[in-house]
Amino acid sequence: MNKNIKKILIQLGLLILAFVLLGIVRNEYVFTVIVIFLIGVSLKMDYHKNEWALLLLGFVLGFFIEVIMGLFYRFQHWDNASLLGVPIWLPLVWGYAFVLIRRVGALIVK
Image (cartoon, rainbow, N blue to C red; front, side):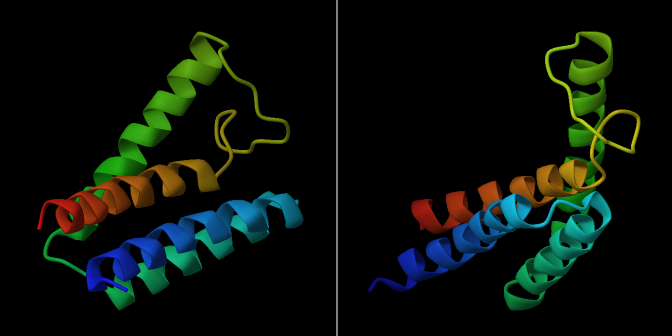
């Protein structure tokens, strides 16, 4: 298997694992800890310079997008969300998605 394809599958696998666990773990706080752990594993496996900044940008933008869409426009609704109507884990997943998109994109264009 091509080395880049293997790296892409590992990166996507962590995100897919998070969403599979979301269906199993119904506690928002426990799932948030799981997401933080998976992000840490991903960064430990393959960290590139300044990815923390990209992760932080994704957290902030994801939070604002979710709050604006959820609270102001009522496009979506989360039951039992404890962070201004947004699950705590959701901005974290947005941040990881920013990093994931950059990593996968870099591997594709190599």
